[in-house]
Length: 321
Image 1 (tube, one colour):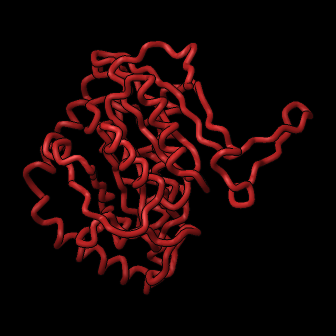
Image 2: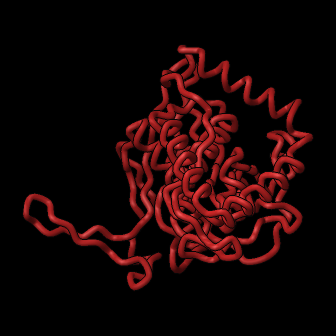
């Protein structure tokens, strides 16, 4: 039985979830949820029992001092609520934690129990994968769903992926089977610069989330962090001729593939975002820019990244899950 005493009735709530681990290249997805929690001052109302889902030899607890008293923080998943005012009030339920080590079905059922009790209208799960994408170009973000009706209504891709998956894929399928609309947003992180943080990918996920839920998100210092990240990578690439040549080849491939996107809907979306950010009456967020973002460590172009296996894309014919 899930009890949510003290949680007020929510307005058009959307659940936004991200999990550290295999589905979080460059910590881009977990970083996006952390940004939402920080900017909107989320209030934690629940934490899943760490004993139920985590192997403490894989995800170890940490010991820290609080005014001289030793305390332990256990790896877990926490839920918080952020209340968004403005012309279009809406509440978000943020789910942020570590990919569980065991009992994934029970884990998803517990998350869905909270979603049901809170009246969540849609679940958006954020993920990031390593891909053959240059850091100098906008971060590709794909929106996928298992629901054909939702795919048509929200202009998303219907996933056709077959193969190993992470908690993002399992939670999305659990939502679908429970009749809860669910979308996964995936950012592609350059595999040769995979170490966290990656503010460029985090910013790209937030921009796409903003469009999806029609809610203006305060970006804070993230656009500036993204620009600084890209400048740092540019400088390191310039010092290594092999990396620079490899990046150029990725740029050429990306530019050729993106030629049809140089006009039409892509430009319209960016223009709409620009207008929203110029409107001070929109949800109370401060004006910002939709700057492109990017890390400062290189990996062998032939190798995986970030201490985890390179996730396979959700669709064998695409570079996204």
